[in-house]
Length: 211
Image (cartoon, rainbow, N blue to C red):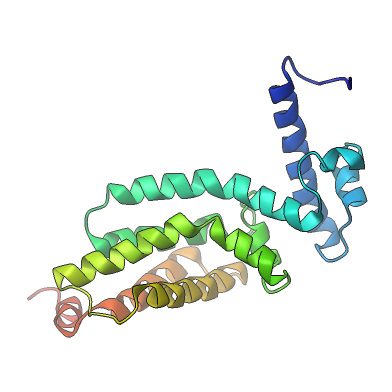
């Protein structure tokens, strides 16, 4: 039986996973994802290459596992935060701010998504996107609530609209990565999205808030 570095096997697995995750992220930063091998990941993590197979069979699967491990607590916290914000416009602005802040360079884990955009096979991209599915559901709820209240214009397909909104946030993320101020990009992105969602009367009120 191999030697373990903790009092229980579960603790040992968690310790090795943290080393593997951190080594993977360091390897991506230093070598680039395209040139990455399991051997180089193991070297950065300080573990045997065969040990990686206990956690993921390929580097793509390891990427998904790393993003999932970082995304799940973030997504759960974000969904919980949004549950306590009543106004749909305020909830949307909060979502935009949190997502842009967590995906900028220097943020551990999730920021790796930025570096790999448009470089991954479709199935890997889809697996990563699935990690954020609860957030898409929150956005759909925001849209539906705003429509029901008469604040947002009716739309033919809420899911299609949400996908368009996600595309806008992705474009905003690229601006932040390129060095644009986060607060400015958040404000512009939220206002752009809300401007497209609001009905005519809501747009009029937003343009003349003193009335």
